[in-house]
Amino acid sequence: MRLEYCFQKIRVRRYCLDGQANFGHLYSDHYLMFLWFLSNSLWRGNGRSDAYNKIYLLNKCLHGFDCAFDTALPDIFIVIHGVGTVLGKASYSNFLAVYHGCTVGQTQGIYPRLGIGVGIGAGAAIIGRSCVGDFSSVGAGCAVLNTDIAANTSVLQGSDGKLAIRGGHVAAIAKEYFLDEFLYAATYSNGNTTDLRQT
Image 1 (cartoon, rainbow, N blue to C red):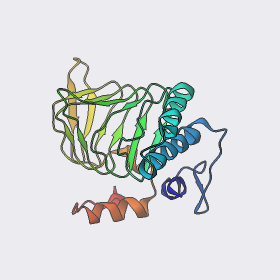
Image 2: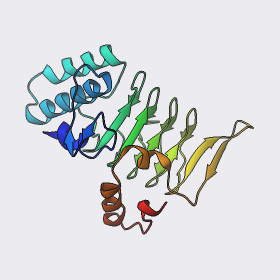
Image 3: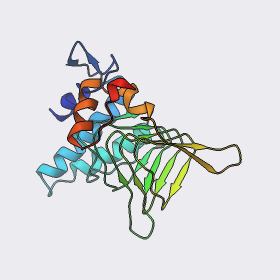
């Protein structure tokens, strides 16, 4: 099951306990992710049914999570308190972590590209012709518009209201939510020489 595979890569005990996926339908973040996987799986398997659209709308009503059934989210991701989050049809990679109120969207039909291990803080937005490199994070309230962000970089809101970009270290979000062994494998499979276990 796709949900089980995803949860097994998450280090949070509520998601994975002793190597076993731990799903609870009464935990809203779990249910949000379950509904998205279900709608996407139905859409992949049967383009004639409208059940996937109804499940998408249910997820939107229950959780305020706007991510269509045909959006290509990665196999491994986590949504933390997903109320008000909008994930458009961007290019996503594994080990994605998003908080509430995030927006990933387009300008003039062009969507962003997000690398491995990208984290998006509460209320942040990544819009348009933007490429966010591997293991980078966009901090709470930041808006990245038609801008490339290098790998291993954190984008923060500066005191002057402008974006402050800090590089030279691996973003904390991926390390916080995903198991080291999987992040390590993803790092080297992508040609990145940073060993996440040493940072």
